[in-house]
Image (cartoon, rainbow, N blue to C red; front, top):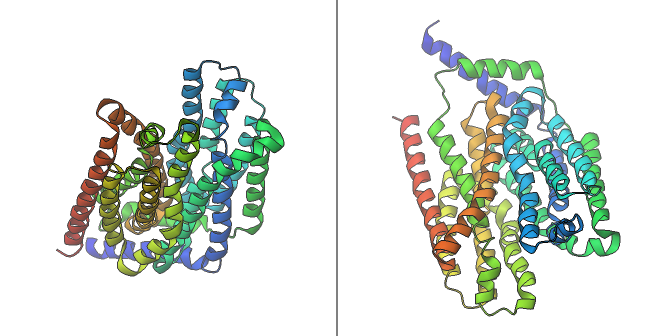
Length: 425
């Protein structure tokens, strides 16, 4: 058999392996999507609901200086995202080898335990360590992305990932609202026990209701075929561009976090209302994304992921500019809603394109790297925004972020053209 015939043989094996997993789970993926949306919503509510009272909890743990309270609160909040960014590729790799459901169960149980333990800490160091562990062992939303991204039919993948993204966004939006009133009923420490119980419910739902037909032997054969099928190599430039774009999504959304309160104060908002208005403005983009994530995911199914990615990057970059020119806080809030609506199509479309650009045996690991890129953007965005705001000016944060998004759109257009030329020389 010639080398060309060998390559074709392995490519056919890969296609069959990819089809077999999706076909075996064709009866389960919609049910699994519902449970994954519920679990992602629940876990992210629990993780984000501490935002309103985190500084108060840090004070209760013995930190007295105002500056130290702010610093420790930031470290404690960011520790979970750091942990998730570090381990997402590992869990994705294990999902490829041992199945997607075990990773969901592991994440839910691990997060339920660590969230409850946070309510028992006696020092701020213990708080940070447990928040870090929650990220290291958790990542339910990341595991959900791997499961739905590999189970949903190719023609419905964009819509399914958009629905999953909506559940996560809703959790991030509702979490701080729940955290605003729950401590008055059960106390700050009791709030963490409630959060742990919520995640425990998601864990039970995952164990009892999630269905997966995973054949470890077939998956192992797919990995062997992947390593041998040199005729269909992964386009590393394409994957790198998509990972960079995913990082830019969170970077753009989070870049104003360090300056938002000061910026709103310059718009004439009274000091006593700054925190509340800043919370509304920060939540506005999540609200916008909730409205359009599933619709833009479905649009990617119809017209192609590249068109949605490039269009959303350009639209979001353009919408960033007038945010630097507003004169009232409500104008900024409306523009953030609009930005959320345009940015919502990016992550589902990127995830769908990543899934279809790598071999079956590498899907989970690559989607794990995608999650790491997103969390990296969530960390880098506030750092860049804070530095630009402090050294150059608050308005320039929006101009720089918008320019980066437009440049990212140009990069995606070049990558898409290059990939198309290689596919059809």
